[in-house]
Image 1: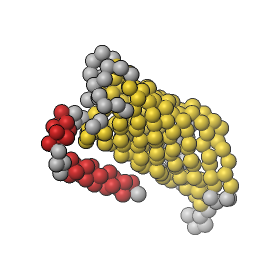
Image 2: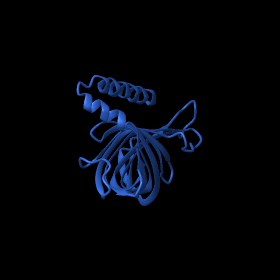
Image 3: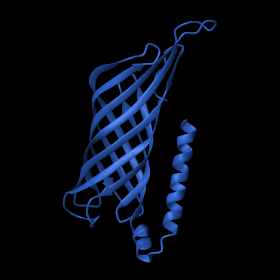
Image 4: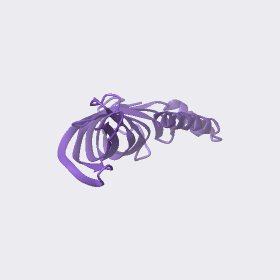
Length: 209
C-alpha cells in the first residue's frame, strides 16, 4: 500500500509538469517561471477524540480526548495564478502512535495579488498515506498506517519581507490498524484494532516563495 501511494504521488508530479509545459499562454508560462517554488512550514496542536473499532469483537468506543503535537512542511511549485501543488510531509504525535503523513498537497491564497502587504486568506488541502515507522510495536504486534486527509483554511500575515506568517485551522483524519497475535504460533488468535483519529488542528507557521 505504501509503494502504491508513492507511485501515485510520483506520476501526479510528472503529470503536473507536463501540463505546465503544454501551456499555450506565454504570459502564464512567464508567471510560472517567476513564482516557481512555495514553502509552508507549520507547527500546531490536534484537538479531539479517536475511535477504536475492534473488528475481532465487533464493537467500537471513543478513546479519551487529548491534545497532541503536529508539524509539517509543504514544498511545491506555483503552477498558475497562485495555485501551488506539491508534497507535504510531517509528524503527528498521538498517545500511542506516531504517524508520518506523506501527502499530495494544494495551496491557494485568496486574492489576485500574491505579493499583497495586507492580511490575506488562503485555502489548502493534503491527502495521502500515514506511515507508522516511528510507532513502537509490542511483541507479536504489527502496526499499519492508513489514509490521511487534511483540509484547512487560514490567514497569511505579512512580515515586511518576502516571508509571511501563517495561522490556520482545519480538520485532520488519520487511520491506523494494529494486529496482535494473542495466541501461539501453532494456534494463533489475532486481535485487530482499527483506530480512527478525527481531530481539529490549529497551526502557526511561515511561508515564503
